Length: 71
Image 1: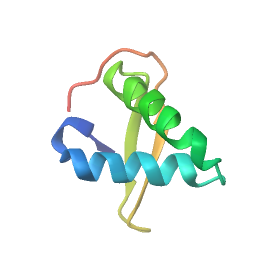
Image 2: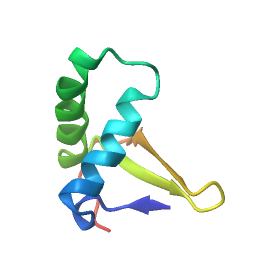
Image 3: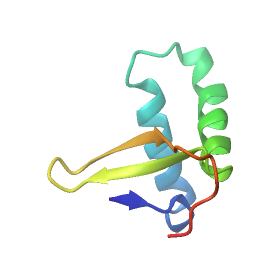
Image 4: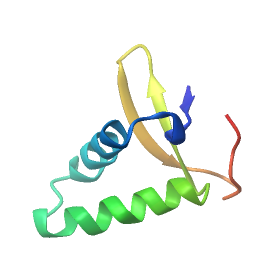
């Protein structure tokens, strides 16, 4: 299920993005840069947040077209 990032509070969005970018053990010095990059990708329609209700977890995935999506 695709979640419209615009419907999340600023705190929740940051939490989702931060968890995503630190999953692979990202160096803490790179976290803020990576958070900003992922946020831009969401804003540009190049990525989407996907929620899996079965595992109750989120991931961020690239889109195919890069075009903004309406939710």
